[in-house]
Image 1 (cartoon, rainbow, N blue to C red):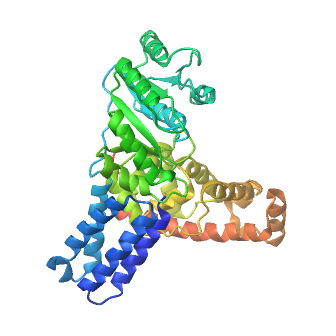
Image 2 (cartoon, one colour):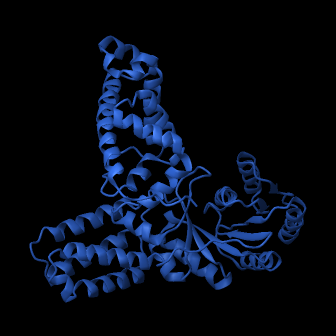
Image 3 (cartoon, rainbow, N blue to C red):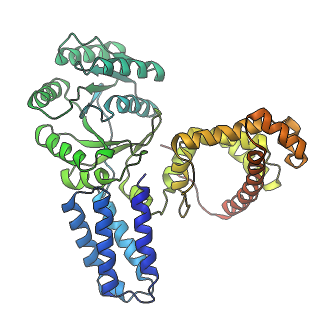
Length: 441
């Protein structure tokens, strides 16, 4: 997520730190590099220029130039301006009606249908009873996809087929919601390959019948400035309340995220960060700005952990770490919980200062975790509890049983010992910190 842009910002700030005294020429040169980095990330040209002008004006102030740590002052300014660029404050998403309606719109291929299912999972965690509505009558595959996803997440779906008019489908969904006591309608509307008058007129008719509390525009973040042009067109024709960015886990340059809020004035409310139905995050401008600048996102990491980690198990794990009785069996259990929290490269990116280059991402990271799991499962219970007894012959047997190499087994055992030492240090540090984790929402 924004890895290329993050790397470029890191190089720019490193160059500034290389000067004993930062002068106007250094700042002007850095601002040229910042503008180039933003344009290469496919940020809207006008947005990039205004951003650089604001940062440059503030960075050339006497307080920054006379500071003992001018590079840190400039990073602070860039962070603050990035937060403003991304929307300043997080967009609220609070449904109060019963049934409350959410209309999901966007172009075909933007990820509307997948997002609708993810949103159903999200609102169900908040205690609501969602009903998915398949209102894309122009793409039968969209109806089938939503029905399949609804079955997977065990959420009811209103899908009468593609023979009815869209308005009739929506009216039928409202009646079904009242009958089944569903308090949230999530309507997956039809997309098109391009914006046209018929599409906008249909969305207007649906909105008139539905009276949604939220109208969300789903944008494919990998389309860069094209996503911004789509948002501008929808803003003129449909008064949407917020934006959803999909495919932020892909090789995206970030231009859509950094431009759309500024161009449309509408908040980004959600970010889809993976293919699983749980991979949906509320969008926090300050947290995203911190990730872009390599400052981590500890709050989001904590929130993910709270959803997957049992408090009693966490206490038991801390006890084992302190007494150095943490075994490969415990490691296997933690790996399985880690996989529930999301891709490894994303999790490491939330830790301040953690360098994630070289960490397998996406499918590659999943394959690496499966390889580790296979190696541990090929060990005997005694070997998992006491890794020091694993000699050469045992390593060859484990490698053969797991379909890996002896080098893979050696690497895992070495990494396990290093990790156990590191986790013990973290455990001691955590015990001295006078902080409480925020309650999970």
